[in-house]
Length: 147
Image: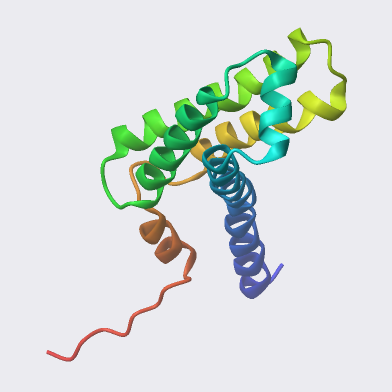
């Protein structure tokens, strides 16, 4: 295998690490909006599960805070807490649907997002911000400034 092929495979694997990150961040952003807007789907789900509707506001604020923590540079311990909180949110959703007797059509996606959250945290470089990780992938190449 040539050096170029090896480099392309390596870069492809690095980019593949962003699949769970993107999925989790997108779902968290959409979920936060839906929870805060209290759309009919959220109201119906909360009624079905027996949760008070104000719990949607609590979850929406928590998801928004998690997004801010994950996307801002620095503060690695805060990011750890954000990822842990998202695992609890998605794991709790899956467990709630299982406890309500719902089928896989209701609990499989939250379970997938809980697993994707674990993967997102495990595969990103330790203690880095999103911009640092992009630079590590070669996504943000800056030309050196002349002296």
